[in-house]
Length: 171
Image 1 (cartoon, rainbow, N blue to C red):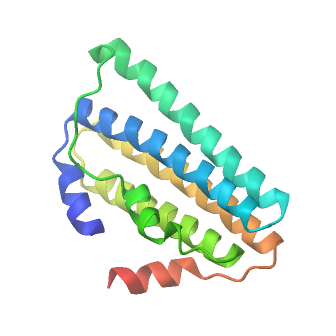
Image 2 (image 1 turned 90 degrees about the vertical axis):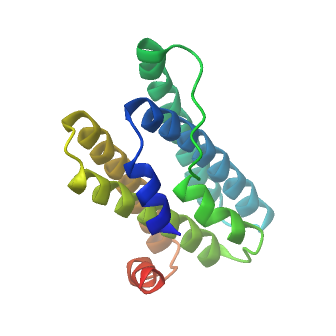
């Protein structure tokens, strides 16, 4: 599925990419807020809830920032881009099966790693400097989320090797 999405993202122009990214950031925010609520329902430590809530708030902030850029260039109306969000796609099917902290963190880490990998691959292949910088910024943001989640897992004593799991899933 990630390869198919990668191919579709490759074909987006700058306006489509911005629309895709803006919607993706808002979807990611919603996903993190739902994970925060799920963590609370499961009685997980408050720090887990707070981390997910903060990641959701940050994602919304990224979406707002990008939307301002988009509005200056293209006006208020986002264009429809028929490409699923890589992170939400990875999380949605698994979300309600979550049973414990390990599951919650594994799902979130896998989606951040997948998104980072796709954006770095796009940056490698891109000839347009402006788009390349957008892809690299996206990848760095996803890496930052990944690192924060991994630190939370370590602090909570949850052992995960998501990078190896992601490699297995993609092969």
